[in-house]
Amino acid sequence: MKKIGLIINPWAGVGGPAGLKGSDGSHTVEQALARGATQRAGARMKTALESLLPFSADIQFVSFAGEMGQALLESMGFRVEVIGRSAAETSCAEDTEKAARVIRDHGVDLLLFAGGDGTARNIYNAIGDDFPVLGIPAGVKMHSGCYAITPAAGGEVLRRLMSGELVDLRSQEVRDIDEQAFRAGKVRTRFYGELLVPEAGQFVQAVKNAGREVEALAVADIAAEIVENMEEDTLYIVGPGSTTFAVMEELGLDGTLLGVDLVRGGELLAADVSAAEIVAQLSEQVGPVKIIVTGIGGQGHVLGRGNQQISPEVLRTVGRDNIIVVATKTKVSELQGRPLLLDSGDAQLDEDWSGFIPVITGYRDSILYPVSDGRTGYVQVPEA
Image (tube, rainbow, N blue to C red):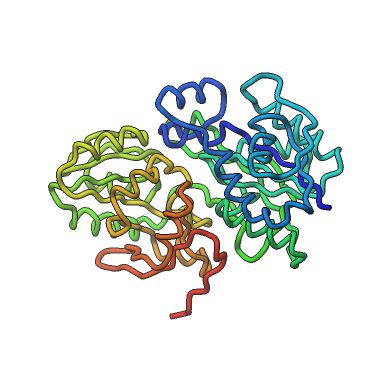
C-alpha cells in the first residue's frame, strides 16, 4: 500500500484566462471571478490522477477536506483519509503550508500538489528540500522546476512509480516572480530554494530562463518576417514574450510584453486582453484570424504558460493551421531536442495538435520542429 499526500490550490491559475498574470491574493481571485474565470486546478489534477486508476486498490491518499483534495479523490473512487481542512471556505497560502506540514508528518511516501509558483513556494516553506514532491502545473507563473511539463506527463511519472520502474530523484529550483512588477511588464524572478522531485525521462519541466531575448538581430529578423507577411483584414492575436513583443515594436504599436494583444490592419485593437475579450472579438471578426506565440526559454511551452488568455475555445476557433510559432534558433537549440510543449488545458486538443509545426526563426527562415502534449516525454531530433 502506497500513501500519497495530495494538495490542490483550488484558485491556482484563475487569473490567467482573465489576463491578470497571476492568481496570488484574494483580491486577484475576486477580480478573476468577476471577469468570468473558472477554477482549473482540480481538472488538471484529475488528468494526472487518471493514470493511477488501475492502481487504486494499492493507494491510500491523505488530503484535506473539500476542494483541497477530498472532493476530487472521492469523485474518482480513490480512498482518502481526510486529516484537516482550510480555515475558511476559500483556502489560502497558509492553508497550503499547514496541509503540507500535516500531510508530511502523517507518513506519506510522496506529496503531490497542483498549483503555480506561489504554491511551490508554500510547499517549500512547509517541508523544505528533503522530501519527495511532484507538482502538477495549474498556475499562471510557471518558472519553477518542480512541475511536470503537463498534467498528463505528471500522470506518467506517477504510473512509473507505481509500476516499480526506475525513477530518479533530483533537486529542482523553486522560483517565483513579483506579480505587481509582472503586471507592469517587468520580470523579476527570485530563487527561493529547492524541492526533491521524482523525474522520469523528460516529463518534468526545466526552470524557465528569465529575462528578454538578447539575440537582438535574430529577433528583429523574425519581427520583420512576420510584419512583411501580415494581411490587412486578418486579426492577429499576439501572445506574450520578448520575441512576439518585437513584432509589436516593428509595427510601431504600444503592445504588452507579458500580455496578449489584438492587432488588425496595422492597428492595435486592444492590449492586454482576457480570454473573454478575445472570444468577443472573434465573434465580430469577419476575416481570417491568426495567433502568434513563442516558446518559453528553457522549457519550450508554446501554450499554457503565461498565455492562458489564449484559451482552448479560442484555439479551436482559430485552428492549428493558423498558429504562427516564432523563436530564435538559439532558443530552440537550448531545448536539446526536447519538443515544444502544448498544455492548453484541453488534453484532447493538445493530443490532436501534437506532431511537427513550422517555427519562424528569422527573415525568410523557418524550421520544422516537433510539438508534443507531453505524454510521449522526450522526442529526439536528428542532428542536421
